[in-house]
Amino acid sequence: MEEMKLPEWMGEAKAVKYLDGIDVRQGFMEKNLLTLARFARGFVFQSNNAAGRGLLQSVDPSARIVGIGVLIVACVFARSAGEIMFAAAISLMLAVFSRVNMLMLLKRILPAFLLTLTVFSPVFFGFFSGGSELMGFDVFSARVALTFEGVRLGAMLVSRVIVITSFMAILFLSTAESDIFKGLSRLPVPGFFTTALFMTFRYLFVLLKIVEDAGLSRKSRVINPAKLKDTQGWFAFSVGFMVERAFRFSGDLTSAMVSRGFTGRLKVSKGVPFAIADYAWLGFSFFVFFIMARA
Amino acid sequence: MTEEIYSLKDVSYGYNGNAAALSGINLSVRNSETISILGANGSGKSTLLKILDGLVYPTGGTVSFHGRILMPGENRSVFREAVGFVFHEPDAQLFCATVFDEIMFGPVQLSITEGEAKERAGDVMNMLGITALRDRPPYSLSSGEKKKVAIASVLSVNPDVLLLDEPTNGLDPRTQVWLMELIEGLRKRGKTCVIATHDLSLAEDVSDRVVVLGENHSVMADAATARVLGDKELLLKANLIHEHGHRHGDIFHIHSHGPYSTHDEHNKG
Image (cartoon, rainbow over all chains, first blue to last red; front, side):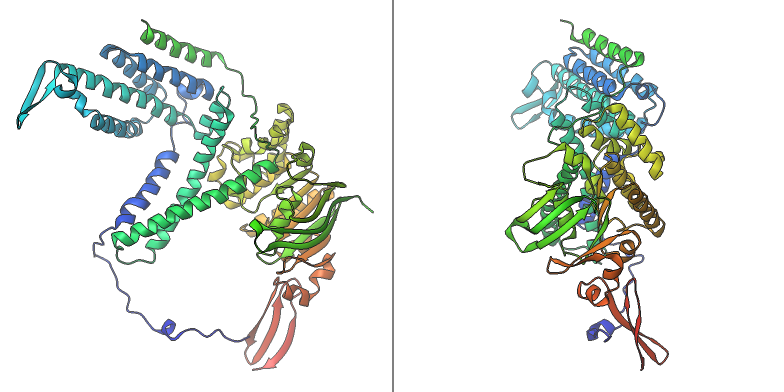
């Protein structure tokens, strides 16, 4: 067999540049794409307290979802600060008795709090809500002032969002992702919705891994951070590649489902009937709802 | 002679009107046979299996299953119960929340009673040694574990025909041996297995018959295993083995790698 002829330059020794001790500035991709992929994977798939033995963990996943849903709707009906505080106390109690990690819970509530505060900050001011002034200042000829009614309205709005977010976070932190979808599939939720949601979740993991690997493989061939424009171009191309890959995956996935008897309507196995604990939990949730929703 | 299960007559297939993935395939599969479909990458092995599973339909020719031509638009549960397909890529095949749900999926879709489906799932998990993985999400498993779960998810339907696409791909040696033992066990139970692979040792160990697809996407050979795998020229032509030379001191050897490696020449270098 003939030896393969290699080009001359492959035989040249390179002077390797060691970058130890040099602070390499991170480029757009390193900062954003890889961090985002890792964060998303960690946030979505982070180990939760689902395996723990707590209040919510002892309830059937379907009952858990319904109960939390009822509590969330109850928060919507809360009309006073006292009722929202009552809902917040229930949320805290659930978190404690379900042995939810408080730091993880706070990490999930904080973005919702900051976003809501930012978006609805005009509500705190007189030019939006009116009412008696608490404190203010003049900007050119206009008066910008915090008002009592504005602060009350804004505080109720923000706290309502925080409590609702906390209920959702407690559900996800106390329930394994597999149980969430299993629970949904046993409720009168359209099968298509649950299937589509699960498939999106399932393949998000696969695609995030591909994104991360693509980013790392690019990083492994780059010494200095690329120019922003170049990286953005590469990023745009990667998004297109991901879409193509997703289409191919969906084709293979459909074939795999059809191969095992799927005819377009997903059949699910019947779950275990609700136990006394499940009914007690549902009873508690509806009781809170009726208290908050009373006329 | 045993009953003919599949009969492919002049089957051709092209993806989206492009160059053919299969060309003029004539093939017969009999009950309880284990057949290996050998071919290099891109020869059409996976496409052939998809046609056998009724997932795609030929653009030319006919495919019959137990004497009845498979037609597009039909999705008979009887066919789906009788034929199981283990995909090359486990990630495409494992789409349920837990391993147990995955194994239950097929029987539930085919309206097998829940009690029986659970019993089958338990038996299959025991048989394949994956009971400990029952509540794990499939995406968190290793490659070997995914392959076992993929196989379990098909076996729970209890198909008479098993189509396996590159089953040993990516598996460590111990798991490969396990797979060969499983196929052997299924053979003894009278199952019909059609295995697409370019792993000649797998074909040699488990197959009654070997079909070779050439790089022109048509059948180059269809005969007993020993006869096909003993034909070095055929295997070289089909890009299933390669030849290379190496030196032992001043002696130069040329030989092929495959199930029947031989030292052809001894030259002084």
